[in-house]
Length: 215
Ligand code: SF4
Picture 1 (cartoon, protein in one colour):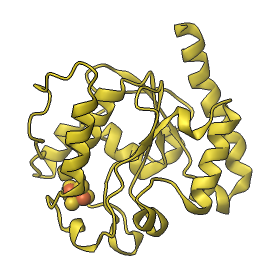
Picture 2 (cartoon, helix red, strand yellow):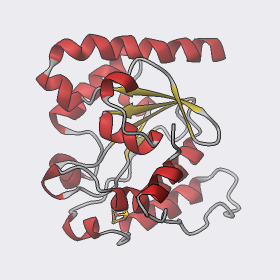
Picture 3 (cartoon, helix red, strand yellow):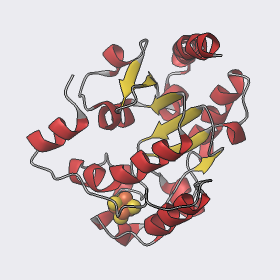
Picture 4 (cartoon, protein in one colour):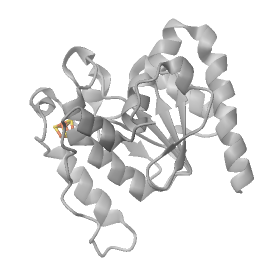
């Protein structure tokens, strides 16, 4: 499977580099979080900053075992500055609840921090610019499991263009630390195809087995 960097290189896209914040001496990492959130709030690295009402940094437990990642803010998220609100967000909250967790016990963010116009798919250049923020968030949270919510998020995270049918139902790995990564259907799709909810439940069981064996 091609790495994300190889995929970007094949598209002749330079990965955007965050200013180095890893030298921050704060042992709790809180200052790192403040710095990265401040960088996102003023970021103009891609054209999406022009149309945003609010960047959507992400929220939840900053030391959670679980890191959920969607593709980009939609209209409601852009207005509220929070990930996964509205109907699809409520369904994701139910999915999380079905795992015995509250939304506050996981961390949720998106590949892109600003809303693409008309909810179009993220462009590769936008992903390249924004991805370092997400990578830094993952580095700080140190999750045991990443859940890619939907096909687009999975493609950006895993550096693949495989169809959803070949992505779900198995454990992938992300990054140098090989963090176990699961791909689930996007809740907006589940709202249109409720019969697929069972598949999400089955997929999440795969990850629970990993966490059980880890504890
Ligand atoms: S989408 Fe990401 S890279 Fe683009 S302006 Fe927003 S924060 Fe910056």
